[in-house]
Amino acid sequence: MSTFKAPKGTYDLLPPDSAKYLAVREAIAAPLRGSGYGYIETPGFETVELFARGVGESTDIVTKEMYAFETKGGTKLALRPEGTASVLRAALEANLHRAGNLPVKLWYSGSYYRYERPQKGRYRHFSQVGAEAIGAEDPALDAELIILADQAYRSLGLQNFRILLNSLGDKECRPVYRAALQDFLRGLDLDEDTLRRAETNPLRVLDDKRESVQKQLGDAPLLRDYLCDACKAYHEEVRELVTAAGVTFEDDPKLVRGLDYYTRTTFEFVHDGLGSQSAVGGGGRYDGLSEMIGGPALPSVGWALGVDRTVLALEAEGVELELPAATSVFAVPLGEEARRVLFAKVTELRKNGVAADFAYGGKGLKAAMKAANRSGARYALILGERDIEEGVVQLKDLESGEQTAFGVNEVVAELESRLG
Image 1 (cartoon, one colour):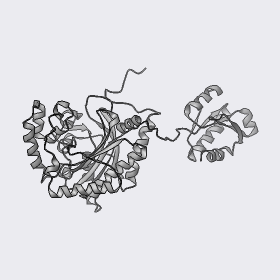
Image 2 (cartoon, helix red, strand yellow):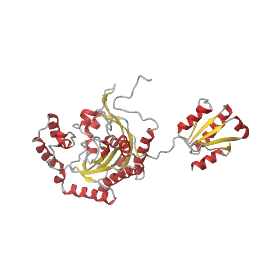
Image 3 (cartoon, one colour):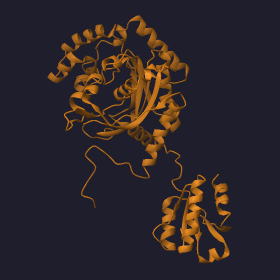
Image 4 (cartoon, helix red, strand yellow):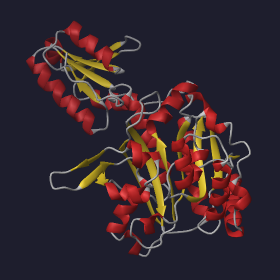
């Protein structure tokens, strides 16, 4: 027994459950790869200032949840709490926006870190798949990303998720709403921390999950009543495009996101089977983020979907994913000569795309057959001394128990035929 354990609020992905996580990642990424998005991978840590500027100095993520540290050289770094700022930083550093083909469309997959109170669906280390379309202001891009996320979830068999949609306005109309919201919040019975947040980032108060706060927000002014004509027209086109694609959504005038960089379109995917941590993913438009981190004006939109939360949603609905067998054929050699012959056959099967494993460690027949059954393989290849003399190998169907002898040089073709 090891004396070490995974840190609090983290988890290990282990077989066979880890296959579900891989399948979810693949399902989310598949529509993106088919829509012009290229893969990007960024470091697991960045300078603290990138997140302070991009995510927002007043956000809980920056003030309470970031894992920040100082290197021996005095550089202040942070484990990445989200993906968008890192992806945009990388795109700007590599001058991808100057290649003449905007928007730059990127997708990513990785681990992210936030210091939070661990609970089901909320971990200190979590996995996301995300997508960003950088450098174009077009309602069709916003709609595209919502549709692709919906497509990914549908492909997994998820049914009971909802899409919440709102507009946060832009730099023209949001300041007017911000002032109106602050006036409203100042008249409420709020604690000092919440009042302080109302002065620095009043929209975040709308996202406060505490019942004592929410019950006072019933008459809060709604941003939709303050949208300028341009933002209204933009949002209406997003709604029309998503609707025309057959994707159902709910207008949520109180929906805000926990990051400062969002403008105009904002959306969230929620699943009511997950309890209080109902969000499985979300995103929106962030037209000013590039300038916040020192780049040129690059209107952009993106989302991130939680792999962990999506797996929990699948479990809540009782959805069983059709996962490829980890092993289709398990080889059981009896004796040294059989080991050499069957190892060569296993290698040949693998080269031909058949998942195959081998009874390592010189197991006897009984122990080796137990290992074959535990592997989940459909077939066992069994080779003993008499089989070698006769030039055959025994092929056993582990489901039916039927066993047939085939020529050593015929068995690979036979297995390929049976496994399709």
